[in-house]
View (cartoon, helix red, strand yellow):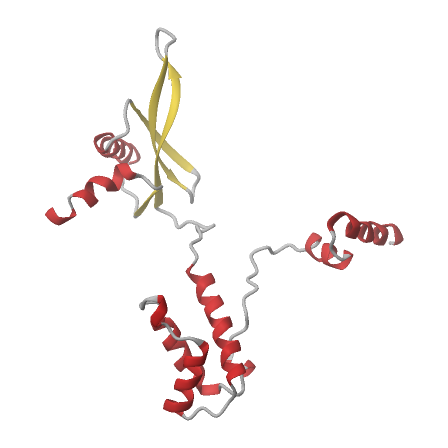
Amino acid sequence: MRSRARIWRKSRSATGFNYRTVQKYAYQENWSEESLPVLNAENYPSLGAYIPIIDTWLEDDCKLPRKQRHTAWRVFCRLRDEHGFTGCYSSVKRYVRKKRFVMKTSDEGFLPLAHPCGWGQVDFGEFMYYDAVQKEQTGYALTVSFPHSNKGYTQAFPSQNQECLLEGMKRIFEYIGGVPVRLRFDNMTTAVAQVLKNRNAL
């Protein structure tokens, strides 16, 4: 036990952190925990029933230009003048700051770790190969993968264009005997450029 304690204490000189902090993260198993601020009404007794009003204002602000959005002071003034709020500005400011942090964190994009069955992903990648006379050539591999089962199907083409994309998907769907419920295209201009260009004609 003493030797283990010495190891944790030595970690302070190696990392610059207290050994208890190092020990905490060394034994942590769940790295998916969200350390978001607590926004429960009971933690803001002076705001009470005003929290839904504040939430509505801040969520509606997302649709407005930045300069037209509520500041914490503006939220406080509206609560005071329009809803008879008698609390202090500091509690409003504290809640608004934490609410905005939660909203920003929630809006950040993350790829799901668990993928529903039947959902697919499409990617077009470049690869090098040697032809029959041992000359280096560039090829393009269209891959439709299914993260839920970790299966994937690939078709090789001499170029990367919309015709090859559609033909490759057709071949793969015919081979597997069906079409995925949903497909996600991995940043492929091949799939969207033509649609966006002719969007007015649709």
